[in-house]
Amino acid sequence: MSGLSRDHVRTMMGEVLAAQGKQLPADDSTRLDGIGFRSLDFSELALRVEDELDTELNFDAPELRSVETVGDVLDFIDQLQPTA
Amino acid sequence: MSDPVSTQDPIPAASCVLITGGTKGLGLELVRDTLQRGAKVATFSRKLTPEIEQLQQEYDGRLFAAPVDINDQDGVKRFFKDASAVLGPIDSLVNNAAMGQDSMHLHTSPEQIARIVQTNLTAPLVLTRAFIRHAMAKTGRGRIVMITSVCAQRGYSGLVTYAATKGGLDAAMRTLAREMHGRFLVNSVAPGFFASDMSSVLGTEQLSTIARRTPSGRMVTPANIAPVVRSLLFDDTNLNGQVITIDGGSSI
Image 1 (cartoon, rainbow over the protein chains, first blue to last red):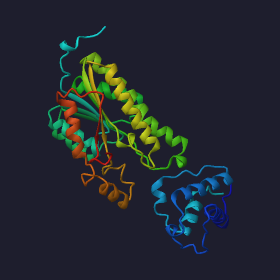
Image 2: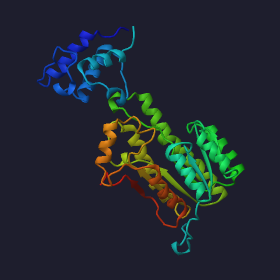
Image 3: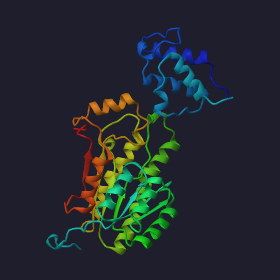
Image 4: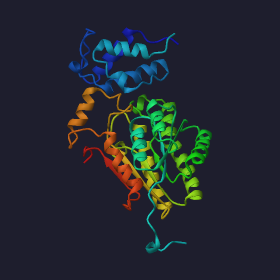
């Protein structure tokens, strides 16, 4: 099973934000609190990724606490995905 | 068939207590406190620690400790036999062993949910059954304390299954108190958050937020819990079927 590309996940993250009338900046170093991307938004993104992969990506909350920027989100989703 | 209330003597103080998960943290504090009170103690955890081995040397013949996983039913049965062969009949139980959780329900796997329910609810219920059967046959009466959590009463994110198991134990405790009337005093002690392996996953900011929102101004420590458990094990309080919450008032 191959994972989703970083760009694909980025697009999905943009869709999660767009559904709330928010925009995803191009800069990966943008802080999440600055764009209103909250923990449940991350959950929504993770569930969308699960749908695409048809597999569950379960994780503990402490792992998520170090996620602070857009790039961190993309890195975190990347390492959660099963390797090919 | 019922006993007239007026003829019912108080349940005697504990003389030999099984404390699960007694090799570190709150369990170790409870083991130490119970030994200091003069009772004998049997305890098990998956692994022994230098601290419990030190106590075994200090309290030779009064403390029986062995490495047993609470989910290992045969191991727990053997432990009961071995411990009572060394210490004599066990008349009291503190259900302390548990595993923590820090994951949102929607991101917790069904397998992990099953593990938490098994360790925190099923295993303590099976152990409590074994204890009651042992104590009924050997001593006839005794005391049971469930270490539960304020999470069973208030909502805390990341603790759905953990809270369900602790609430389950509180419910079982009340029913047992009714079922075993006149034979066993059964109560729960529900700590708030305190520094432990289970809270170590919380960030510094979260811990300071908890302390700030606690009316007493400080988080609970195992040393705060021990005197309450001690009273439930040794004093003639006639407390039965109750949950005593120790959280510095954060749940009021």
